[in-house]
Image 1 (cartoon, rainbow over the protein chains, first blue to last red):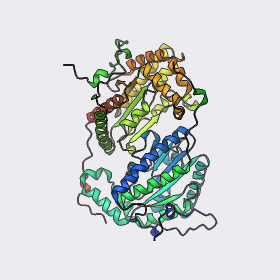
Image 2: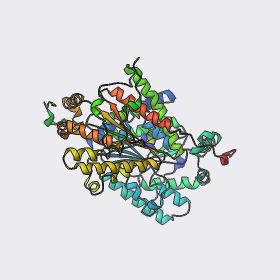
Image 3: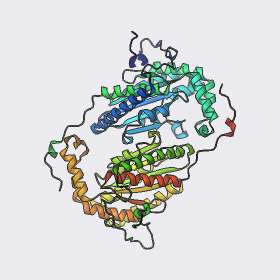
Image 4: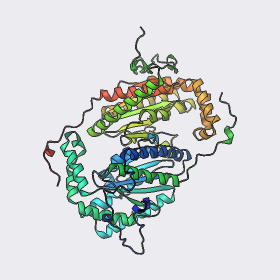
Length: 279
Length: 279
């Protein structure tokens, strides 16, 4: 019998300062794999709905406690499904408890600061679940592919990211990072579908085609970036994402495990309220 | 046959600088009324779900267009159901498109600025639907009840709020403001229920009981504040809210009418994409 897949089989090995280079490669992960799918779309949707309801309760508990913070970082190539994942996985979670932060190309004011400045400002507060839709990792990817960040500067940014995330974690933030991994063929199909449907043109930016031309470079930088920033306190997971249903279920399973690992409990009753009658 | 209720029957008369005092009173609105309920809870829930799906589509269109902004302000006494309204009305709306901002007691840094400073920073961007869970109106209510804002300062704050909201509206923000109107008896029942259920104690703050002692003062200030700040560009609505189902349906109906009034359209197809093949 084949070994049951484990979420941690998809975790990027932790960065080890001693050996510097990890042998992690995205090529070792099949984007079309569906290890956490039941094989039936209906059953997958039912599981997603079940996890959604649990996450809703766990999030309320996080909010009630006002202690821990949770940060989910979503990265992936264009069309990899960051928006779709947020919609599908968090559909059942009370919108009150969600804080979704999309990071676009930095504005001039943002550019006038260090690259972590705008990110730090959006870090979750106590009791919050924050989702970064793209993140400070774009500041490793884009400038490197465009040739504006040399190897030394790249390493320094990775170091600053590790230190930043470790500081967040030390101060009560649970961090989980997902790279939505699609194949180049799947991206072609998704981009073509957007072009062929005029009502979807608003989702399409011509720069997406430019970025696609740099596919291999992006994949290589992703490998380096993930390998250099996966840590026990802020692990990266590779999510096979050619199948949208699988992608959603796997991210949901990861979140559920993360929340359950927090051992959240509602605050104890307040003795002072015992027997109080409201006038 | 009785006249069908209209949403605008619940709109606070617009402030008129000429006559100064409006004859608006919250006492004229029965908190236990259910004018927009079908009379059946199941039918109300079905209607809520139907509106939710429509709001989801309309919100996507707002996002696609990246022009208009929508701001919903929710106010009401403790337990009036601000959180519950957000959960129920926006349950079907893509969390990506929602920005929910809870305003708590101001921090020292916030207090060191004018009262609109922290509010302006959270105003919706183009394509965004933002919900204020409490708002700058707390800065009229609380200090007045506590005796820290005299009549002249109150009037000046109202004027500044009118000018601020008019500026937002002029620059593309559609503003809608809802006062969730519950009776003092209903609040007693809801507070008592929280006290009697120890698992709900975390939702309870003893200051809620202090505020309740000032019920009549709060109602009076609400009347003055609403009358002085209801405008064509930022109207206030009184939502009878003793019935949670009615409250949810009425707020949903108002939002739907507001969104439909925007005549949102998806951006036109891009000619430049015609016939493009993705390599």
